[in-house]
Image 1 (tube, rainbow, N blue to C red):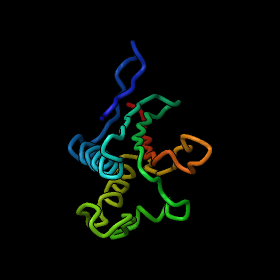
Image 2: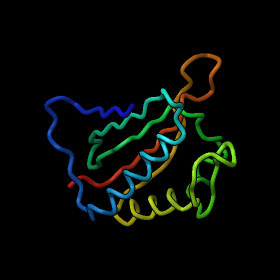
Image 3: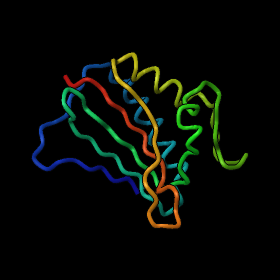
Image 4: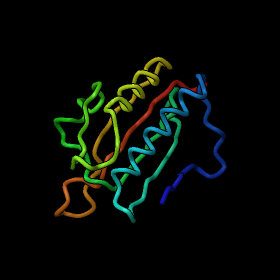
Length: 134
């Protein structure tokens, strides 16, 4: 299930940039989130303004990312799939996405969501895009 959260009555969030490139980033992050989520999992997209930036967070309910790999997953050709038959990927998507966001004056980073209960260390992954507001 895909869920998009926004503040009711909020003005549209706008950034300056190349629409097809930013679209490519969003599609890549959404596809990753869906591929790592369980079949009945939820992928959430939330946007908000923070100061002079627009933040877009994409969250999944998958296994999360080992802490030591939170930065490494953005390296070219790096992949951290739990099994060899876990989807088709080249290890380039996150690297390219980060390059696109940085070229637009922004940041892209990953973090783990808190666990859903005391026995869970991660409630999934969160990818955060921060871009200058238009």
